[in-house]
Image (cartoon, rainbow, N blue to C red):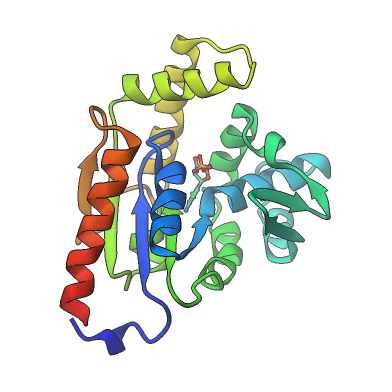
Length: 228
Ligand code: C5P
């Protein structure tokens, strides 16, 4: 592979369904390689949150795109700020994820977030996670991973996470929500959730986070040898 095909910083794209562990894995891979990270789902969640606060309907495409284009957001010290207000805990709520999935169907919203996402691509490299990192946002990513896990395993992980944070949760309801969100993300007409044709698929159902991170870092090292 010719390094000149990647004149900007190299990108590792990690896509997959909800609660497959992409976010945690992406930030650990980034830390291990000294790369920047982009959790693209947070941008969709931020648009959803800002819209909810301004009482904008979930199908008002032009107003939502306007919010996406002008979003005043800052990622700092592991937290997220919307208009200078810390919003990390609001973003992680299930309702915010559901709203994000709903507005993510709208082409103008996706278009408005495209360049913002590409702006995170700075040296020495970027690990980006989401649904369309390898297919649309960074089609020239050096390494593309499609991370999956069974619905049962993903619901169980999300359940554990919520319980640890003191939230009330039902495993059955979480499974239903995950399946509904995956179906919505996979069936939309713009940038549907699907593996890039050149992605490596990784099923994490029976793997620990450390094993998943180690596998991806090993794949990256193999690519690095090829591009240098
Ligand atoms: O990854 P996360 O669950 O935070 O994403 C929230 C929602 O944002 C997803 O269900 C999906 O609909 C949308 N999304 C997207 N494209 C991305 C990242 C997230 O459509 N690259």
